[in-house]
Length: 443
Image (tube, rainbow, N blue to C red; front, side, top):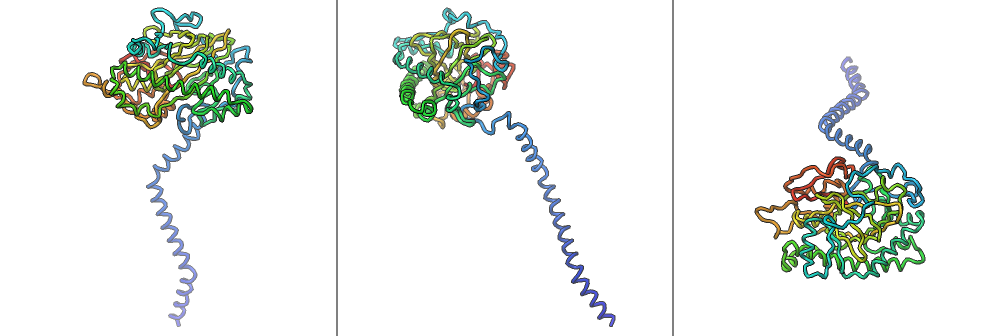
């Protein structure tokens, strides 16, 4: 009898409480496993949360990814001012005084410290180009084969574009992650103050943007741009042959690295510098070097361009009728193994005349590796820079600006110089290498 009662109680216990005990044990086991998993993943989770918090905190000050060419804010009707309508200089454009020996108020630009002017029909043109590249990193050319009428046409096309109302120009505004179109200076985000200029970038066909600007009359603008691009591309190739030849590279050796120019092309940058009510405190385009192989610049008949030379300070580059300014870029500096500097330059403004410039920024195809030419390397001249593709270098410069060249340099030997002339990335100095080359300012 007792046995029967106990058996019933055991059965009752098993059917009532045993499932609960099993469930409780399973929960304890699950909790134990969870604690072990948390202990194993503790540091990765902390790092992930820290990274997420940092991203949220900095997403308004840093780009989510570097642009192929630039990083800057997208122009809007609210943020982009009609500069020509302003009678006073806004605080956001006030850069303060410029403590430089060269001023636009004394703009002759000629004399012992003037940028060389080279006639490309001169039998000694290649030698003169080499001398100018080595000592200046910039020179002007005449008799270059570009018709004066085409230069007049491109200048007129630029003026017609920038003369449009701001609201109309903003229809072709550069997108937040784009490269082409209308907007502020492409290097603006690296500096604390805004620049007294507006720009329009063209890469390939201008058709889409032109339709937005002139819905019923865009063909003329497109025809001029496309003709100018074609002529500039041919001139850039000719200049590259002269420059590389001036380094002592034979025609046969030039053919051996012809892939560098295979598919090489250029972007066009039209810049407008309106009359400024207070030019002594404004900056049209802040100091920088171009990332290119070379840049071909046409400037209207108004002084504003200045280049920096180590022994001379800022030197004005006066416009020459029919002449073109040639700037050595960062990639050509790499190609020359540091022999030819990429020139540090800027644009000033004035209170009397509107100024316009058209830059053709010439570079290789995005995947081409650029490195010091083998003929320039020996036991006493080791390579100064590691190989880098065009797209890789643009990514580095869009993120690090003034440090780009130094980040790919193999044997650094730098000293501080040019204090206070650059943007946010290095507010106190800019590096100058052993060849007195001004390094790595994005353009």
